[in-house]
Length: 266
Ligand code: ATR
View 1 (cartoon, rainbow, N blue to C red):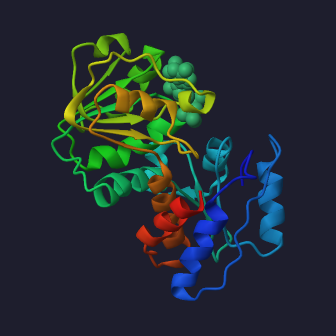
View 2: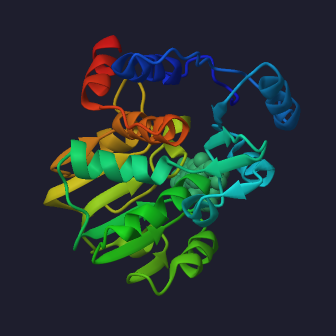
């Protein structure tokens, strides 16, 4: 459920997962009007629905509607996966962060441990991935945001776990990072955060949590300014879906072939 959802790739992804286990599932994208999530969920359950993915702009609503939450959903403050339990309670989880980490570590073969990590953005998307990122022991995490106060608020939530600091984009001048993750929504509007041109080293990975038919503006900018490798968030999309599938069905689908199938489709 989300808005908009018409172009969601998730039904395709979950059908490929189900085929791996010969599960018979029905998974479709349901467009929900603003404010309409509680009614939509009630209708879905009445019709026999077992679980849901929740996407923008309803991840905070889903967080509030869940009867109980996983630790990672609590840390993220947002929910992208709901499961209806036998006792009728709604379990809320967040698989976005683990999706990002799996894509970086497994698919892109890039260890986060000991790395200098820059996370751009301080909204729901950025905050949602910080917990799992930190669990992988980066040497340092810097959160840069257009509105620095928001970055400071996020840093407060996670302080004490790893060296972590907040700053503005201008403060990044002269600093270098191994991994730069774009968690802003700038790419949606065809924009790039105004970053200094010297962020990257010859080993750096630039990662955009967004994906599209074409490289995002952030990835184009990064390739032009010295990032060794760039990746959009298509792998993250599949990995978070696999983790949701695990939450619902207790088995973890293989993802590489699904990512390849999606790339072939687009
Ligand atoms: P989401 O849930 O997708 O994270 P959000 O909470 O509205 O959405 O947060 C959007 C993030 O993208 C914020 O960090 C925002 O910066 P501000 O906090 O300063 O608003 C960031 N953002 C959006 N457009 C941007 C742009 N053109 N350049 C840089 N940052 C941008």
